[in-house]
Image 1: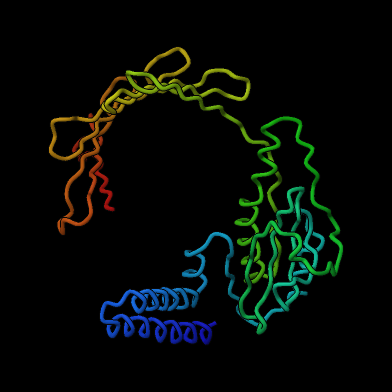
Image 2 (image 1 turned 60 degrees about the horizontal axis):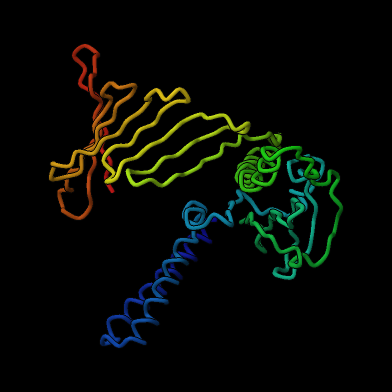
Length: 302
């Protein structure tokens, strides 16, 4: 992994320097600057692909997993072929888009699946997502546990089943990393139905009104905002005020006050960053009563 890291860092640094050089000698010409920008972005991308941490921070579709020693995909197949997951057990396949064999989970009724493959030297693994079944060239094995059919009886069950793939990808990545380090497979979470809420919006001349209802159509919260956006209210089903936010209009910098059940709760106030580039927000609790301890103060800078 260290060799790969330095290989990508050297290559990325060289391409980045080439992009900077093209910008310097381009004399402001549009075509040259465009090419230089593309080269510069490409160099930064190569540099970022050097480690799993940097690579995974750049994309949500594919995750990189480093190996402590060279691995073979058959090791992962033997470990996961008898493990039942929300997308069935693992099976091996050949893809049109790569020479290596890959471990596959799925596909589901919509053709979505996860696949895991290793680089040629076995030092790095990638966990990807796809919805194109035609990329699969050949099915090398058959899953011991086929993917669970969608037997949802209501909307909550149906949405829970079909939203599970993205959560499963994150869980599978952590599971694979654990297997690489410890040689054991952890049990997977089972699919469970989600609570579905309905959110309706009503535009009015005096502001906006929102209703939040549960699966059975019962009102949970009412939400009102004024025009201009000065005050924001949240009420319970009995129209009792739970939360209120007000914006003070006479301040030079934006200031918001929060109230919980009618009592002052906190203040969010903006202040300029010392460099004048970004803004800083200070959040302070009101009515703090804890002896000589100062009220909690949080600072958010962006």
